[in-house]
Length: 114
Length: 114
Image (tube, rainbow over the protein chains, first blue to last red):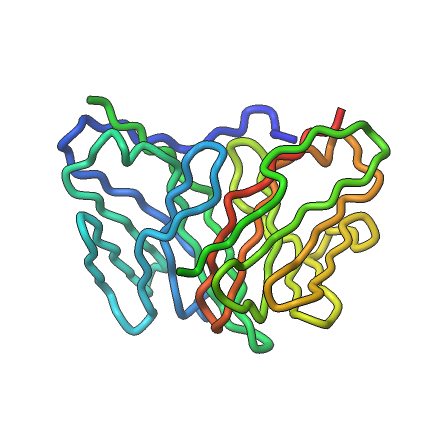
């Protein structure tokens, strides 16, 4: 069950603002990173990914930045909308024994006010 | 494409009973399927990895005799929670993979054990 006192970091923004969600990963051997969006009661939804040979990748309204030196990943959402409200997880992928293993970060709750 | 379904979406059972959750890849064949557990306001934790036709690989701390995983075909994996207790109440999410680094997630199953 839920640990007493455990809560997700929360980022509160106004509609139209840009949002930046940060993530620190642990394994320097990880070669592929993914950001997921999870709405309440649903499974994770793929947003954007980046491989370790890149430091930036852009999608529609989203940009992922990767800093391998400090093992840091960020997700930037431009012109944030109320529909972006959700929990965002970064995940690092390590390929081992022929298949991938994803390790998820703790998550950040994004709250967008109209 | 790449749709993964889970059934049931919600299940309530009495303590001591067993519950089976199905995970299906609807439009592709999954060489590997993964099972995750997520407690409220926490991240996804990998429970086990299964390849079609072989025994599942369980993460440390996950009891293989309590969480039985069967991966009988390239489109179906099942997780059976045996002798369920209230502390097993959680959100169980599966994913399916065809390649080394892409996992497609199901919508999750909410298990409540009374």
